[in-house]
Image (cartoon, rainbow, N blue to C red):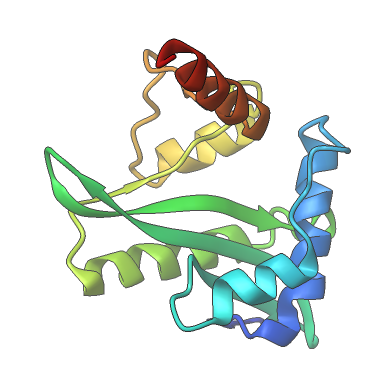
Length: 164
């Protein structure tokens, strides 16, 4: 199988969005994707892109993505976060995931980052085994903390009430 890993273009975002939706279904969250194709195009390809995306093409069809963005660690300095590495169900086990991860690691190395972070859902044992085989450490004693949009609004509302 021949494939090509390249930087994504704004015109790729419909196929990228399709893969994001496929991942949400795989992770049993089919209605969780709120980001739109237009959001991806605007946020990733404007004057100040919020993310960088690599795509894996097979026969001119995008079959995988790796979406990353810059972060900063108070302990390490510059790091990048791999938000998602997605390979279509049809292409899992084909080597596309390795090729995408290789690309992300080389990109991070070229940027001089001190660490690359990402999360993996705890029941996805094949992904965990894949990452550990590549030399990644899965920190099972850390919990991911998130504040949703509704949580942010409630937090702000509570701040306003507290300052009265």
